[in-house]
Structures are given as structure tokens and as C-alpha cells.
Length: 173
Image 1 (tube, rainbow, N blue to C red):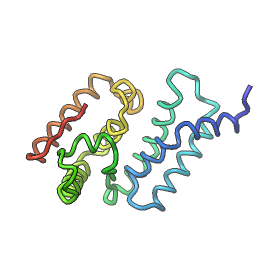
Image 2 (image 1 turned 180 degrees about the vertical axis):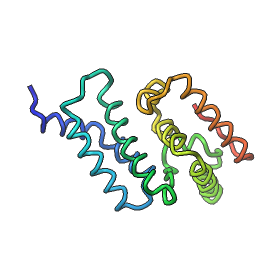
Image 3 (image 1 turned 135 degrees about the vertical axis):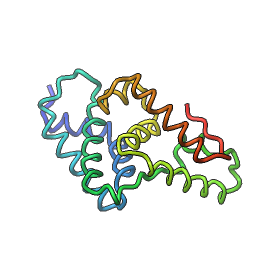
């Protein structure tokens, strides 16, 4: 049987990339990202004894990370920017297929990032999870709303993005 420290290390090593993504999405600077990261780790440690296994451990970690990020965003809402990575497969699939034109792709990324930053905090959280390629069921468990509500929200967000970013190819899976 694992002790708490071994279990914690195993959870963090298996979910580090997810946590880092959330920190990048919601923090404007590397220092802020590190602050959120540390806060997430502390909350995982403190909550570890209360994890009952009713969901996947990754869903539980996402929920903690999103709650911390949203709490941070609430304190710093005016500074909050959702930072997306052009190298993300989901983003690459979203931008037009003109791989040779870096300028066009950078312009599209900036436009997409600007539009994502116009979303509400919850919608940003949902889109961050979509970009991390989570299922609607996982997103519902993490955000704490019903799966049909998640699907409706994703559909509305995508429609808004399509409308505001006419001219590009925006095909989300």
C-alpha cells in the first residue's frame, strides 16, 4: 500500500502536463503560472485524503486545478488572458491549412486568442478543456454542470467564434 507522499508524487507525475496547461491558460506571466501551480499542488496534497474514487483521478485533479485557476482569475480578472499555443494539435486543426504562411497563422492565432479572451470565465475554462481534448462527460464532471449543458455551451462558443472570425476554417472536433 502506498503512503500519501508516494500517492501524491504518482498523481502529480501523471497529471503534470494537464496542470501546466491550465496554469498557462489562466496566468499572464510565468511567475503567476508558478503561483497557480504551487497552489494547485498544495490543494491536491490537502485534499488527497478526501478523494473517494467516485471519478477518475485525472478528473479530480482537473477539477482542483480549474477551481484554483478560476479563483485566481476572479482576483485578477482584468489581467486574465487565455494563452493558447499555436503548436497545439487542436489549434493547428482550427487555423487555416496554409502551413507555409507563418504570418497568416500568427495573425489567426492572435485573432483566436483575442476572441477566446472575450469569453466569460466559465466559457474560457470549458474551451481550455476542449483544447486539452477532454470529452464532454469529463468537462461536465470538472466544471460541475450537466453534460448536455456542456455540449450546448461548446456549440454556442464555437458558433460565436465562427461568426466573429469569418474567413478562417474553424472545425472543432
